[in-house]
Length: 244
Image (cartoon, rainbow, N blue to C red; front, side):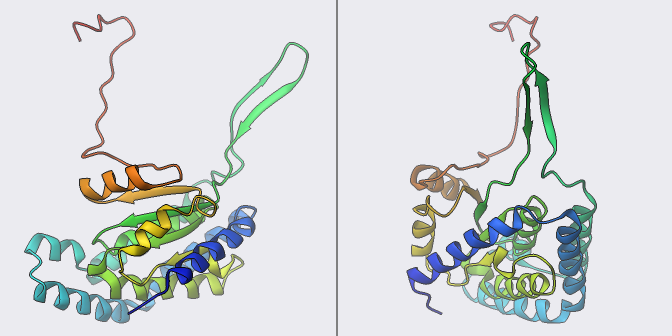
């Protein structure tokens, strides 16, 4: 499978154009699209499992260990879980337009802060194909277009899920181009995506320490990334910090 680097930019620019419509889409339109995604996940279970099996066969032939293969595996129960998670996201309050802070100045001027979409969110991730649906549906709910580049081990699974997302959007009021899946596993596309600060507003790497570090060092746009774990330590304001 080959994809020219310019094709990847075309996909990112299509997501950029779609983000303008998606950002002002109604809650009902977004929820309807998410319900369509959930329905198609259940309806196309056999097709999804067939494509996933191709990845599993290739992974075993490549010598992937059992733990990695387990992460790569989709089952009817996992697909049902993906559909349930998508419907749960649809049921959540719409964050777009929510006022998170408001005050009135002494001169009577009213100032407020509201949540607005970022625009285009790109995610680079590894073996779990369910992440394709996780990220796409969270982005759609929050009014953001998504550009998704999964690992080469899940290329067939991600492709069929990308088709599903496109078909769900095509039957909705949302722009069809709002969820873009990069199908070519060539690592050169990662570098190209990381340079697209003019098109991509936020980069989210999800994977091992090597991937996280590389994205942090190379990306030309803001990055949201976890470290090796997501742990926080809180110290009470009245505590002795040195003692703590």
